[in-house]
Image (tube, rainbow, N blue to C red):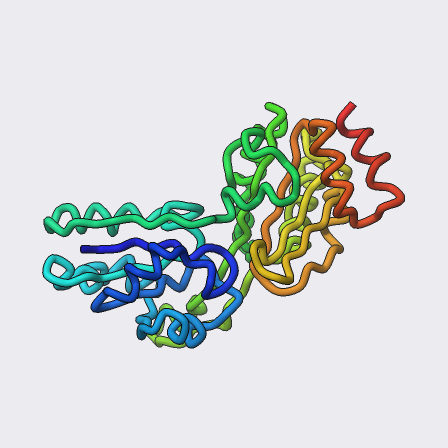
Length: 285
């Protein structure tokens, strides 16, 4: 049996009882290690689960999936995913490979950012398409995510923006020379994401385009959702560009039409308590 087990969003204890039972009976246990992170390290998970964990980076999952599935038809193998196995990043390819090999599989779900984002008080059914905001480089500055956010806002919908993670990335030089030398991990922050959105707004304004998203659009920054030191901050997009929420992982919400109850909830987490209510009302009337 192949088990796909969600670990939740906080620490080792966020795994479900059903998930923990599955992990402890498995012959091999892989930890997916490139789409998200927990607030604790691999060693803490191993101690709590009572099992040795095998790192499964992007290369392992995408290019060596057969090794993960090896002997899973005669023994139990677990594949652990932070959040939910089919949350922000699905692992359908692994399931399809298992089915083609005649290996049965079982999914054990858990909380993911896709549902836990409701902690800020915005109603889940008012969210539109989720987008990913990627790190810009000097030569690559895509804007497709902005178009999706703008479309959601025009439809009155909120947008959950998942922020880029760079883990086990190679520089162009090392990649071209075939050197297995990796860059330090990088995790996009709320203020970095907001700065990119503001840059797009300014660029389009210079081209004569007025966006549905402005510097005064109400946004929500979230950090380490599900952890004891979780942080939430609400304010304008401009304020999000200067807010400091600490370590990863971060997410950003660009709001659409705000229900009065949602607006009241957001005022529990203001960046600037004296001006938030006035600015929010201006954008929702």
